[in-house]
Each structure stands twice: as structure tokens, then as C-alpha cells.
Length: 383
Ligand SMILES: Cc1ncc(COP(=O)(O)O)c(C=O)c1O
Image 1 (spheres, rainbow, N blue to C red):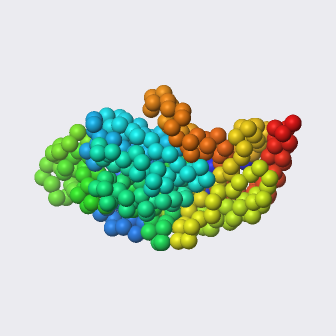
Image 2 (cartoon, rainbow, N blue to C red):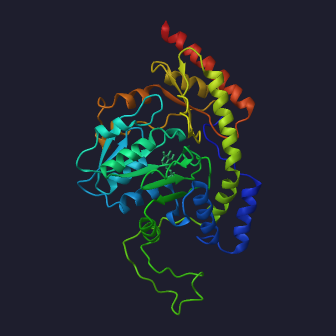
Image 3 (tube, helix red, strand yellow):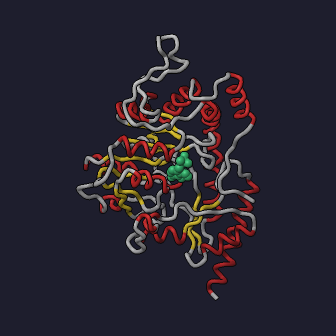
């Protein structure tokens, strides 16, 4: 089976893990600090503004808390969002207001967001679909003009940029994911960026049980009673550890190579699938935009999409669709009519295998199977 997602973990990561074992300390420690600093450098922000997390979802839950979102506050999210983003808002008693998306890029346009803003909108929370930056710069400007916070779910955007600026750093808070299906993988892991340094300090504190003065080996030499601490908030435990950080440091060093391969694969799919009757490839990236190419998606007639997916599965090519629109879900209101772009995207989008370990032969096989499946199902649907 050719997988949709697959991490690239090998001997270098194993050696880094062995070093952590040998050090006698696997918890949050010096490697975590180095990982944060190197990620900050990669994103082009000061290290004091980033905090490593145990997942992107956790970073988004923390972001909603840090921004003081609660009952009576509305947060606008694209209907095509990762469920953890909406859960983060709803869990704090905030009201999720779903906006529509452009069915070709699956990203919201500024007018989609603007239409949903009310006097009670406290924040906008957008992702960059599949790593495509979309209209994040324009949405950031809109939020700035209206005095509304912007949170970026940059889970799939570790290498996405607009005019050199990293996605996830356009808004007030950004959150990245290093889970098992992402590009840079640490098993589980995440990162939070806060534009306001004070918010970053609070993220660090609230993400570690709200403890102000943390005891531990790093402070033993300086404290008479190193076991004492203050608690400043009812914080949670969002921290990662040196095992994950050691893997992440190796993965960050390999990221440029991963991205080269992903760009090659996206270009090959574009070239080989463009012009296939009944199939549309993703829109071209605008000038100045760089994608992480986390997803590669095609658009098919909604009458054949599921049958094509099933046929591909039978031919050992695994596909998927990210993300089933949340506004359809009963817990979020089950509104089936209001957002036509999201409905269309959900009916016709199919995500193909996309990871840096795909060989040229894998890519050729996916292309051949997709061409055959689309041709067969389209002929069948016409009968
Ligand atoms: C857009 C998006 N946001 C957030 C997440 C969640 O990341 P994590 O597993 O690190 O919580 C995912 C995971 O697939 C995602 O695709």
C-alpha cells in the first residue's frame, strides 16, 4: 500500500535518541531548549516568543485560554478546519462561527471571514490548507484593522511562507504540529508562537502547571529549597521532552531535503495529472508563496470521487480527504446549506499520497492508477 502520509525516521534519529538515553535524562531539558531556539531561527522569530508543546492541539487550547476567550465570545473558523481548533474554542465556552472556503484552494478568502465578523468576534482562527498559505496575509490585515486577534493553525505549514515570512507568524499566536503524520515528526509534539512576549511568558508558565519558579536540576545550585514553587494560574501540562526534541533537531536539519523532494513530487503530479479529463489539480501558488506541500489534492466530479477513492484503495493507493466540514457535525450545529464552497470541497476533493519517501516509481504508479480510476469511473457514471 502506498500511504498518504509517512514520516522519514532513520539511523540519525535513532542515534540522537540513544544519546538522550545515555544522558540519563529524558524529560524536558537542554535538547528541548535547543529545539525551541532552532525552530525560532527557522521561523525567523526571537526564541523568547516560542514555547515547545506536546501537540498542536494543546497549543491551540492554550492559545484560546491565553486570549481570554470564553462565554459570549465568537471565534471565526473556516468550516474546513481540523476539529481540534474548533474544540479548543468550544471547550472554553466560546461560540464557533464557521466561514466558507474557496473550493479550489480550500482556504478562506478575506471576504468569507469578514462576512462572519460581528461585534462579539474576539478572534479568527485559520489554517493554511495542506501547507498553502492562502490569504493569510490579507486576513491578518483584516483582523489587525478590526482589532481582532488572529490565531494560525500552522500544523501543516512548517516550511510555508509568504514573501519570506513564515506562516504561523502573521497573527497573534501560531501553532505547529510535529505529530506522526506531519513533515517534521517527533512522534507527538508542537510549538506555540506568541507575537506578544508577555503572552509567550504566560504560555510557558500556564503550559507547566502555572508554576512561576520551577525547581529542577537546572536551578539546584541556586536555590536553598529547590522543591518550593509558586502557582500563578491553574495551568496545565503541555510540555514536550528531550526524546522528542532530539528527534526534532535531526528532522529540522533534514527539512530542506524533505521540502526539495515534496516540491518535486507536487510538480510531477501537476505535470502528469493536468489535462486528465474530469480531474482538476490544485491552483498554482501565487508569486511569493511557498507551500510545505503537506497535502496534494485533486478535485473530481462529486458523483465519482468516492468510487475513485475505493478503486485506488483496491489498487493499493491510499487516499483521504482532510477535513470533513465541521459545520455539518451535530455538535457544531449541523447546518448543511449555508456554506457552499465548503460543501463543494467536501464532495469533490481527494488527497493523494504525499510524503518525501515516495520514489519516482511510487509517483508514477499513483499517477497511472489515478488516471485509470478516473477514466473508468467517469465512463461508468456517464452510462
Ligand atoms: C490543520 C491541523 N491542525 C492541527 C492538527 C493537530 O496536530 P496535533 O496532532 O499535533 O495536535 C492537525 C493534525 O492533523 C492538522 O492537520
